[in-house]
Structures are given as structure tokens and as C-alpha cells.
Length: 479
Image 1: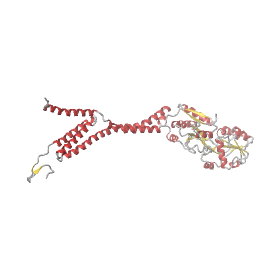
Image 2: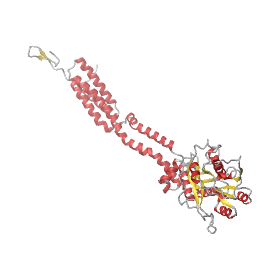
Image 3: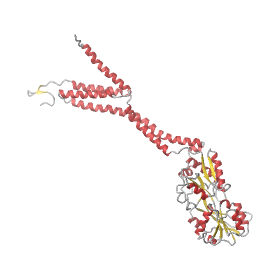
Image 4: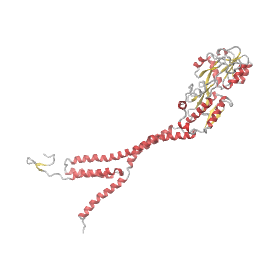
């Protein structure tokens, strides 16, 4: 015998369906909408990664533990300066390798040649126009001028008032590769003097002084180590030897922009014998600390700091604190050097040990995108996430309102059936939504509103009744 379900059983089955739906809905509520989570948090993560990548691109690596400076002959003034730099940088754990050279010309050639192991070097002004290097030095930068290197011209015989008077005489201009030789040639060329009309010698230092005393040459151009205070005093003590006075110094400085006019006061070399007997005007290029453009900013700061310690005192040719200075002549002042001269060391390098400051600077650069992008973005992400969830709920409300408007127009039974099917589809969509617990209440409210609209659709159509004119009155659209 067939067993038919009792009304009670039917009621039980009907009651079980909502329970299963609520169970399914409860299970959906417990899950996280990963799609919305990715849409809200993903862009923040992507932008942060891009920002960190940009920071890594522009961030410099840690400064190297050693660099090389090309200086001058061992024991020379330039070499001694470089050795003092080495001792100062060693205090911060940086090894400065001092490389010997013939002088400024060779230093410049090394810096202009990427194959040469040199990061920084002393270079006298006026050498960037040399044929061997003029096309190769455009990328070099200056960390500043560090001292004057005045030119002293000694002669014997009758006083010389103009350099043009050396035409046809025997003149020592310094050894090959020296900055003194290049400056001497530039000054002589400006006066129409060259090797064709004047005998030029490459004597230097004591050899040039001895030749001058023995009248084997008529004049000697001396700079740097060959023109120390002691050697100049000794030469002026010799009878018949004089020191040339640049009476046209202002004109030379105006034409050769890397030169500076310097005065040697009366008696500056010997108070007792009042040497020189009057104030002598001289011209001097500045010696610059030239570097390759990839020099690490932290090492640039260390080198300028060392230059201040070495060259900052007062001498016969400069005031205290005059050097180093951002005097731009043939090479642009590097951005790092300009920043240092304007504001000094950065905060971290001013108060922390060198290597710790370097680490803090790089870590800080990486933390900047996290602070500026990631943290605010993560604070905004819950708002975006909530907006995405609510948007999906509000979209269902739009569909529901359209059905309710259709239900108010008393549709035909076939149309009501179609509307109920659409309503069931909306409910199934809502049941399939993945919602966090915090939005469960809104989801249940939406289901209540769905039931409210279903109630409108399932109400029977009002029975038509006779109208005043004997006709029937039904729906609002009947006539």
C-alpha cells in the first residue's frame, strides 16, 4: 500500500526547507569574501610594492669600505694632503688608498679614464681644456676648491714688468705632466710666446733654482712644492734675482676665469730684510677635489669634512675657513657637495657612527613607502571592503524595487508567475552571497524584504464588482 505523506509530514517538510536555507546562509556568513578582500587590499599592496621598488631604484647601495685618491709624487704637498685625508677617513672605518702620480695632469687623466682605479683626485684649475682630456671630463664633478696654488715667476737681471718681455729668453716652465707647466704655457701663449720663439726648459724645483742662480736660464715658473716659503726666501736672498709682479693681474683673472689674484705682502718672506720689498701681485688657480659622478654621497661628505679639517686653517694665501669652498670653475659642483655646503651633514651622519648612519638612512628610505602608502592604505581598506559588500546588497535592492513596482500594477496570473520566478532567482543569488559576520544583519533584512515583495505577488487579484453604470469594476486599468 502506498504511504501518502500526512499533513503533519507535509508541514514538517515545509518547515525543514527554511531551516536548511538558514543553515546554508549561516555557513555563507561565516566565510570571507576573498574577492572583495583582494579588490580592497590588493591595490594597496601593489602600490606599496611599486613604491618600494622605486625607492630601491633611487636608493644608493651601502658605501664601499675603500676608495682611491690620485694625489701626486710621494712626499709632495699633494701626497701629504691625501695621506692626511687617509688618516681622517680611517676614523670612520673607510680605507683611502693614496695613489702616487706625476701631478694634476695625470690625476685628471686617470679620473677621466674609467679603466683607471681612481675615485677622486686633486686637480689644478685650467686643465680641462687639454686636448687629451677635454672630451672625457664632461661627467666629472667637483667636491669644491680646497686651496690656492699661486704661481711665482723668478728672474735674474733687469726688472721685468710684462710677461711679453720673456720672449726670446730661456725660461723654465716645469716638468711634463705638471700643472705648473700647463699654466705657464697658457700665460706665455697669451703673450705670444711659445717654443718657436723662446727656449723652454722642463726644469723644476731646486734644479730650476740652481740654473737660475748660474744664469743658465733667465726665468723660472714655480708652483706648489717648488715655491714654498723657504725656497722663495732663499731665491730672493740671491743677488740679482727678482720676483715678478703681475701688474696686469686683474686682466689675467678676467680672461682666465680659473685664476684668482693674490697679494704677497711686503716683508712676508723675511721681516728682517723686508723681502719682498713691496707688495707683489700674483695669480693662482685653485686646486679642486674632483670626483667621478658615481661617488657615494656618504663618502662625498666624509671627503669634504676631511678637506675642512686639513685646509680650513689660515695660511699666507688664505683666510681661516675659506676652504673648502663650492667655487665652480670648469667642473660642476656635485649635488651632494652642494647639499653639504648648504646644510652640512644629514641628521643621521651628524649624530650616529658612519656605518650605523648609512644603515639607518637606507632602512629609512625603504620604510618611507610603508609609512606613506601601506599604513594609510590598510586603514582605508576596511572602508573599501565594506563598500564593495554593501554594493552587492544594494544591487539586489534595485532588482527588488523593480519587481515591487511591477507587482503594484496588478499583473495577469502569467506575469505574476514570471515575477515570482524572478524573485526566487534574486533570493537564490542572495543565498549564494559570501558575507562576513558583520554584514549578516543586512543580509537577513534583505531576505525579509524579499518575503515582503513575495507577499504582494502572492495576494489574490481583487474580485471585480459592478460599477455605477452597471458595468464591472476590476483593476485600475479596466474601463
